Each structure stands twice: as C-alpha cells, then as structure tokens.
Amino acid sequence: MDNIIDLQSVKQKKEEDRFDELVQDIDDHEETIDLFCVKAVQGIVGILIDEFGCDMYANHKTIYDIISIVEHIKSLSYRARSEEYPLQTYTDMLLENCIDDPEEMLHQFMNDEYY
Image 1 (cartoon, helix red, strand yellow):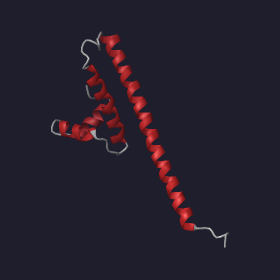
Image 2: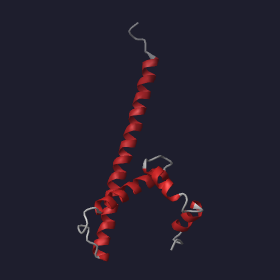
Image 3: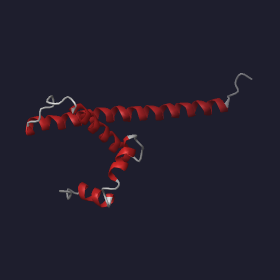
Image 4: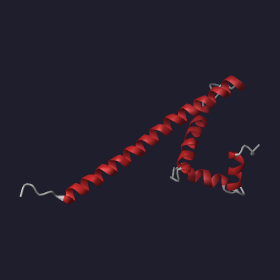
C-alpha cells in the first residue's frame, strides 16, 4: 500500500507551484517596471537639467512631481496590459471630462499627430 500515489496531493502541489510561478511573474514585472520607471524619469530629469537649465534643487517639492511621473508610467504600463493600478482611478476622474474622444487622441499621439 506504500506505492499508492495520492493524486489529490499531486494536483494540489501542481496548483501551488503554478500559483507561486504567477506570483513570481507579477513580482518580476513590478520590479522591472519600477526600475524602468526610475531610469526613464532620471533621463527626463537629466534632459530638463541639461537642455532646459532646470534646477531640481530650487524647490525640493520637485520630488513630488518626479514621484508622480514614476507612478504615472507604472499606471500606464498596467493599463496597457489591461491590469488595474490605483492611480488610474484618479487619472480617469481628472481627465475623462477633458478628453472628448480618448481613442482618437491616443491614435493621434501614437502617430505623432498630437502637436
């Protein structure tokens, strides 16, 4: 009787392993997006300093804007993957009455027709 395989345990172990893989995938995505966002915003800030002469230290609250940009990039990455991110609720509330046709505006932006 020691040779009997408990199929329920095997199935449960497979499900637990799959769940662990999904959690790891989510963690990896979040870590990758976090790193990308910080590097992207550092690049933007560098351009503002180098090309436009902005002094980030003139007002220490610039960090609020920097963090906001990081969070908005995260929000964009999640929305583009059809996933929710807390900032999306605020963004929707802020802009939904300002943009008549988001689909058209997105098309214009993506095709470099916005400005």
